[in-house]
Picture (cartoon, chains in turn cyan, purple):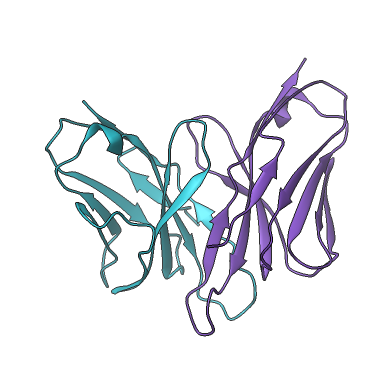
Length: 116
Length: 115
């Protein structure tokens, strides 16, 4: 059973370009979370999606950032007109549909975005 | 806004020593997870605790969830260089009845175990 797959692992973009980060959740998982991590810092929540729905985007910057999780295919985090401050590691996590109390999530290896 | 504070932020110890890392909040969580992250990799789930007062052991690691489900600790016995990494706690909750589940992460404890 493959884990959470993110690609690319490393992405370099010039200021003003668009960045697209992909996340394929674990098999059977229908919930996807995106987090951003700056060097030597913890994880900051960005957005929580279920198939075809954005459940919580309270951590997403209001401009330039968007996320989707279509019925078919991976979840996409899109950053338009990137700036140097967008340079960070972006992690995706997935969790199964569950009615239990647990909210454990499993992470991909991340995409390291560098804006030059 | 729910916050999780981890302490210490940095910890450097000698191989063989014991250590405890703390994760505290003023909020109640329905579950709490501990993750370990190594440089260049994603966080790896170590354990989930869901019951107040629960204690789980994973080899030399002991995890405890506070009775009030607001705090947790991770104790490592006889630390080894392979334990080096960033330890993150994450609290799970539903901010409002019927709302989506959320994971709130602490800022992490960077542990270095010197040989």
